[in-house]
Image 1 (cartoon, rainbow, N blue to C red):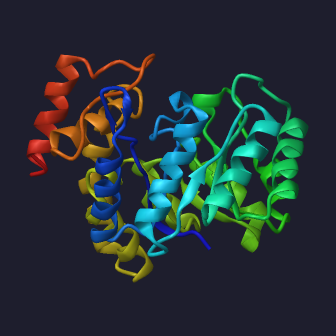
Image 2 (cartoon, rainbow, N blue to C red):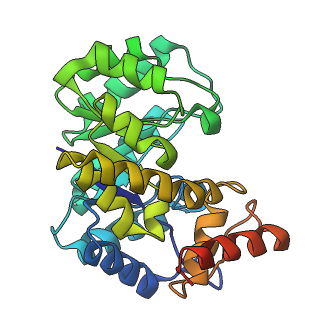
Length: 290
């Protein structure tokens, strides 16, 4: 259902508020450059510092601007199951095509707790749902055996696997078979994950290089392994630069260096350190992005 090059889009701000005009422009830029889906209000979209009204409004703007041209998978995760259900219901009411649900952070639930959390959301909201496993951000790892238990639920259709571990991704693929679509959550291993059976990527790098990230996925799907390998190696340096500091600070700075929005982030995130900004700018110049 969800596959290809899917961007986890940044949320542009202007003087502390969501910059709705720039958000619409960013959506158009993605679609014009071959992006297959858009995720608003994910980690890259600074969902953790959006209030409830802003969260709904960002999703609403993206859905409106996309206008059914590509799927919109709204970030609706929370460390409160009741809250995740309510946010996911709102996303469905707004017209989202799916929901991306990060593992509950801070609580550090057991595997049974994780299973019951995701099952509760899937039982409560009839909307295609994407599990999101990123233990580096949440301090909890959704294990392959738990994913396999969840994969049989009709509303759970995919997982964004962002452990950075090909072994774990492979175990998910081996245990789940066709019951769930696996998407890479790390740009630097999109190609090897697709070689193992993943169907695409939810990408940070696509914010600044959407055409190239889409081309990598398309080349693999077309069986052009040489081109896919070339693009994988070509994108490696810039993808690594997206994590020179905590995501989304570098990528939003990159988008700003391209003149597409301000580099404004919300506390407790801070602007990119000047030394790292210079490094990022130099790398983007190498790629001809600025």
